[in-house]
Image (cartoon, rainbow over all chains, first blue to last red):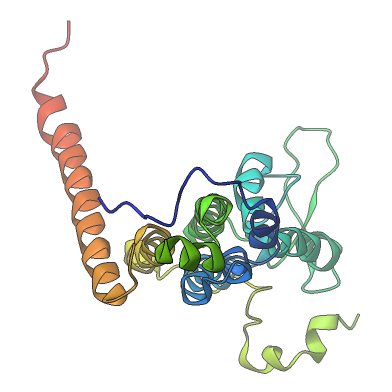
Length: 159
Length: 91
């Protein structure tokens, strides 16, 4: 296992952590570790958009899958935007059709769901991709929180 | 009734990326685990490497190791469920 000498007991970079949540990898970029931030961002965003391509925005649903959403929310505003798109576009019927599903109880009102909703492995795998993207971004955020900014790294190296 | 989706260019191809599920390769859904592990490896190695020299090679190695580890766990679970459990005596 490698240990990064850039991670020390110095003050935590709360601003970088916040930027890292806003856009995955931007936390590292904001403290001067541009390449590291871009690579981390490519990994996290690749996972998240991969999940959306496989399962659609239906994979991100804070009402129906709240526990999964807590993990997905680690990826930042893109998770919130995906949840909004799911509610505002799919569940409202603005995109696709609303189709009636069998009622869960004999006298219950049949639920209307989007024709773009899927219950196949595509939904499960897409949900997993987005959730792991969120969890990996938490790792990336903690890295940005503890990583020494480039100016301080350079001056420490000269000492 | 005309829907918003009818006006999207993607409708021409029968699939609207991001909004509509792309699918999971049917019985080959497990192949999607490889890009999953690859994405995790990129993010993990980007935060754990001291130097980024040879980054992509380390990502590939990490991906292969992780995939073999998960595959081994899957094989062990398969053997346990289909080989060992049937050997257990009931009662």
